[in-house]
Amino acid sequence: DVKVTQSSRYLVKRTGEKVFLECVQDMDHENMFWYRQDPGLGLRLIYFSYDVKMKEKGDIPEGYSVSREKKERFSLILESASTNQTSMYLCASSTIGGAGVTDTQYFGPGTRLTVL
Amino acid sequence: DAKTTQPPSMDCAEGRAANLPCNHSTISGNEYVYWYRQIHSQGPQYIIHGLKNNETNEMASLIITEDRKSSTLILPHATLRDTAVYYCIVRRSYNFNKFYFGSGTKLNVKP
Image (tube, rainbow over all chains, first blue to last red; front, side, top):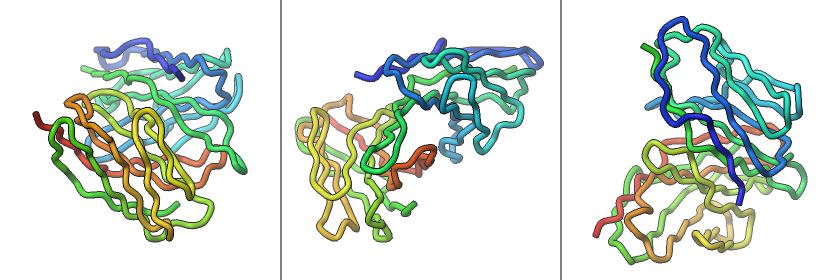
């Protein structure tokens, strides 16, 4: 079974703090993703990575950065947390999609971050 | 990617089959139908996907109509733990194509 784990299920931080969210996958997937999920807004893509040290911006990258030093690990960094970054953060991984190959994304359990 | 339409909520008695419908009338030939579910406060869980043929795995069955304009996810013996929001997603499978999770169907399994 594919397993995607996230470092914390619940996290409470103060405004201005630097926050690290970590994600690890054990399926040797090339792609990894960070989303945030808010009521009424669905899942929104923050960043994704298709290889070690490679990253691409998603739909809402402002206020976030990422790091992928090893294939199995993808970190999301909030440089200076703000209250509007209170959300559920979801990590996902997938293999490379293409002709005849589906790139099903597998999600972690999520981290519910509260910024006070 | 094609748009999908799902009922906002459904009820099912525990132990009975749950049949969750999805309409995707604008689906194109190379788009897959994916189903995920999300139990409250957890990450989305992949269930099943298909292109043209019906599919079955240990979790569920996916029935796709011959014209591919609609599909049904079947949970053969629903349990209380199957209470969740179920998302039907239609998309082409190519690298970095996003998964758009709409509103889904809230399935309530009742004792």
